[in-house]
Image 1 (cartoon, rainbow, N blue to C red):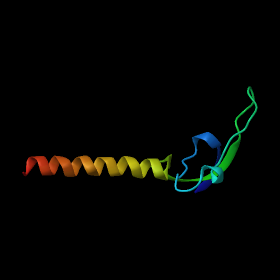
Image 2: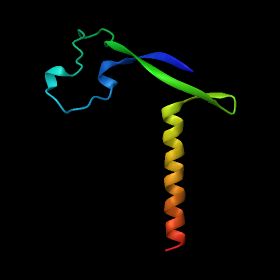
Image 3: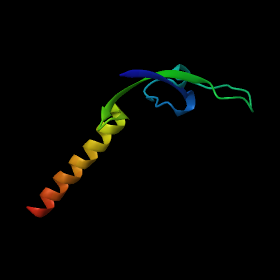
Image 4: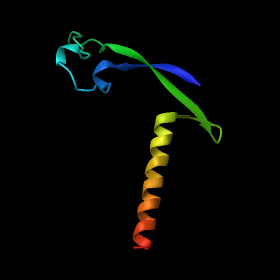
Length: 76
């Protein structure tokens, strides 16, 4: 399932390959809510609970990396 979440522009990851003028900028006046942008967030269920795909896969990758490192340490 995919949904849209509104994230403050200053929290978005931006690639720094080009001129800064072409990036996203927030010029909200002081004391106001920051400008937001809707981003798609993919989710699926793990044991009946919703989980963000990117976060779940990141956790899984880190577990796999630790498993491989433990194997290498045990069999060196």
